[in-house]
Length: 117
Image 1 (cartoon, one colour):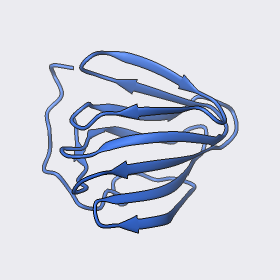
Image 2 (cartoon, helix red, strand yellow; image 1 turned 90 degrees about the horizontal axis):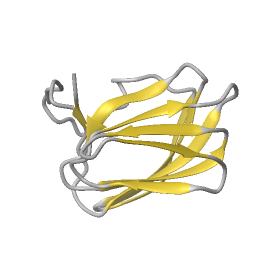
Image 3 (tube, helix red, strand yellow; image 1 turned 60 degrees about the horizontal axis):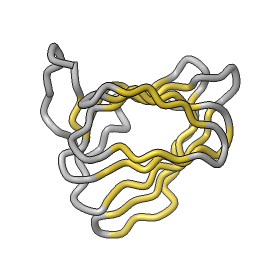
Image 4 (cartoon, rainbow, N blue to C red; image 1 turned 45 degrees about the vertical axis):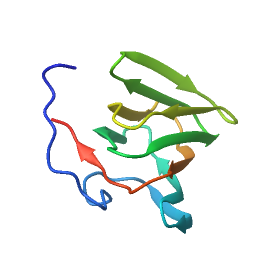
């Protein structure tokens, strides 16, 4: 995505997008496990992480991930997972008609969220 620009990295992105539910299950230096629930109309906007990867694991519903560098479109259902490497731009959407619930494992390293516009 050559036309996307990075904004300043943030340490907590929870104010940048709405979700139905957000819970932190584990937090250790350099590693977190969070659970997010998205309605059919919600998404996690385009972003990347400088130092950490995101591992997505779907609990309920259907996820669609869009990634850049290289461009990729990934669909996941319950029990499926995918890793977005550090510095790889990605967008998370709910691909179904019911809520999407997933775990996101983030690490190992210092967390940041770099929004893209």
